[in-house]
Each structure stands twice: as C-alpha cells, then as structure tokens.
Length: 257
Image 1: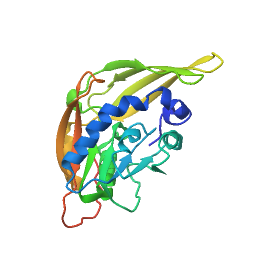
Image 2: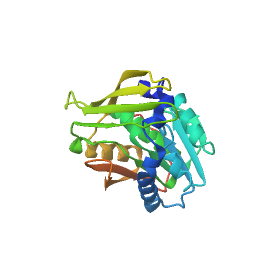
Image 3: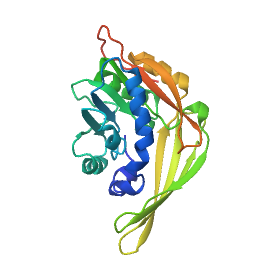
Image 4: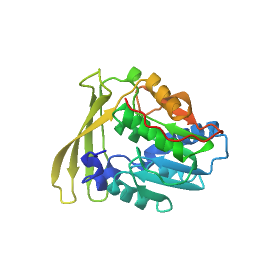
C-alpha cells in the first residue's frame, strides 16, 4: 500500500501530530479487550501497522514481548526511538509472514488502509496465521459503514524548535464503494520561524459490520463485536475481537471481493 506523505517525508514530524501520552486511555482499553478474550495467558503481542509506536509505548509495559510491523521505515524509526526495547520489522500487513505465532495480534486504525475486501481479508489472514490457537486478535477501524459520517477535526503540537498544526476533513465521495477520504492540511513551522503548508490525502476502507464479521469468519476466526465510546471521538466506535479456535490447522485461502 503506497503511503501518504505523513508516513514518508513527514514521518519525522509524527510526534507533533499525535503524542504518546494521548494514547494511555485507549491502550488500556485495548489491553483489557485482548486479555478478556484470550484463552491462553497473554505474554506476546504482535501489532500490525504499528506506525510511530504510540500504542506500543503503553502496551509494552503490559506484555513480556512486543513485536511491531509497519510498511513505513520512517515511522518505524520514530517508533524505534520511542520503543527501543521492542522488536521492529518493515512489512505489509496484508502479506508479511514472520514465521511464528503470538498470544495476541493487534491492528489499530492502520487497518483502514485496506480499501477492498481482498485487502481486508489479506490483513485478517496475516493476523490469523500469526495468532496462536486459543489466542485473540483485535481490529480497531476508525469507522464502519453504519456509523460513518463526514466530519472535521484539528490538532497539532509544539516540539523542540518546531511546531505543527493540522486540519482534518473526512468525507465520502461515493457511498456505493468501500472507500472514504481523509484530506489533511499540515502547517509546519521550523526552528527559524519559516512555515510551509502541505496537503495529504488518505484513501481508507469502509465496510459494514456484517462484512467484517463475514470476513473474520471466512479466515477461521470466531468474531465478537465490541462497542466503545472514547472521550476523544464524538461517536461510538466499533472494534472486532477475533478468537482463533483451538483445533485442526487449516491452510491459508485466497478470498477476493
């Protein structure tokens, strides 16, 4: 998946877009969701699409081993500085194979970059083959079709010698397909006071709850839908817990939309 400029040339600015401290509450919720549904004692966690490592900065204190995978080397460099004790790998969450299993697999909002059912199933397959029997995967999309609506937001932080502010505009140009758009405008102010403005477009996937459940069942998971109201979002978010049953092994399948 080709990444927006936030994950390439602007990756070093990520800590001024979103601060690790802002993730403490949601990370505790994700940890509880994983532990509440994991049949085995959870000690190891794989995060797919880990980005700059903000969730990991909290979850690493709750697991014995945390392994992070992201497609962007720039974002992994940011995460590596924040989480040097964690294992980092460059990889596509649709296809990466590390050759081992974990008690828990976690995919935060990076799952939104799966924009077709084929892409989504690829992510779910990756999670399944890395999840131990009796283990659990947690998927946290920003939106499902039923709760989606256009919205705007803004934010940004001051750092050492430089600052960033952004405007975020979420909209859906074609409600009949499986995509929506987030347009981002960044104002970057450097140490010498010079400022520049960048536009960034994120094309993201949008699926119904029924499509999520069907896809999870299709790769072999036993899914459960979780509803969560977080103080940072003005709507009820939907997460998907998926248990990998203990039982006969099954080979990976190719599922297309």
